[in-house]
Image (cartoon, rainbow, N blue to C red; front, side):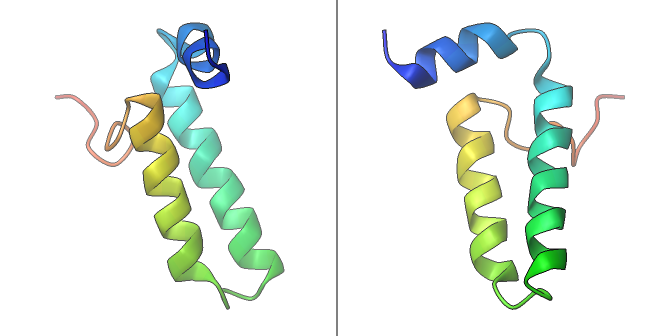
Amino acid sequence: MSVMDKLKQMLKGHEDQASRGIDKAGDFADEKTQSKYSGQVDTAQDKLKEQLGNEGTHDNPPQ
């Protein structure tokens, strides 16, 4: 079992929290770099959310 599989299993049921954590970490990185690398940070956030299987969870909450 790969590390990513283990992470997915641990985060199952907590996708919203994981998405918020990813967003918060990206915001922190943007703040520390004065948004110099915001494009790369956004791409990394999107790819990580995609890998965890919860892309768009935080941006489009269920109604």
